[in-house]
Image 1 (tube, rainbow, N blue to C red):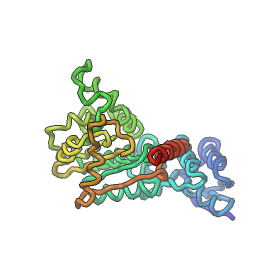
Image 2 (cartoon, helix red, strand yellow):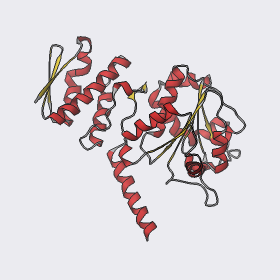
Image 3 (cartoon, rainbow, N blue to C red):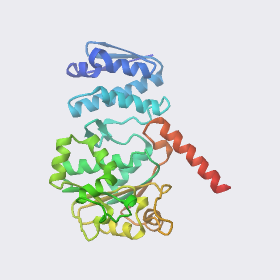
Image 4 (cartoon, helix red, strand yellow):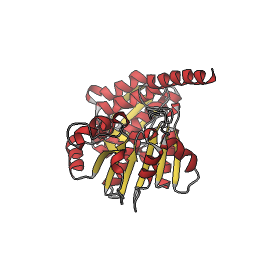
Length: 319
């Protein structure tokens, strides 16, 4: 079976890559042959494999048209997602669902759970994203926030997480606030670094368009026209969760992400995230998205590792 895709001549060389490297990369992963003649790409193989290759090529074209360039790394990331799906491009990103074009390519929902997450954010002013590591909660929420900021839908982005490793008591640490909290907020910086050029990120932070703070420093603020994200929310106490949620001002949105199986609080403290799932699940304007292992989009081994630990934990509970 074969399928012919027509390309605009101005993008053909970018799609093919240097020495047809992009096409060869697809062929090395999906069992198809791809040939180029004029403005046409001919894909030969089984129907399912042709569909997978077409999906990869579709996102490549979408990234190219929006970014104006297509890096080998962009294509390689798509190939990794294909492999992590066990030969199914379940993580395929439809161009029309792209949230934000970051430094490393198109960002958007790639799984059923992530699509539900996006829909929840569109429909609600407060959204909880709950699930295991690697399901894209932090990355997607930041992409949504950056998209809103650049569309002038909000004036600033507030990113925070509990500094539970320091007991939220940072006064004894040397240096100014940034020096004290940066080690605990580094995962947020890492996510932003993957989306924004360093000079643009620096400008946003200097002009307070993006603020990255520990949860404890949110107390006493009212945030209008802001996009608020609380990461690692399972490590917030009940009072901290209430405090964060009540910072919401006019024209603002809030996303709360966490994994209820990874609570690091002292034994005498209860997770604010766990309580919130029980008392806020029927409140209009608040949405909940629950991710599972099928939504994991990191290295394929991550899914297996989390599954193995989960099995052991379930057995220990039963015993």
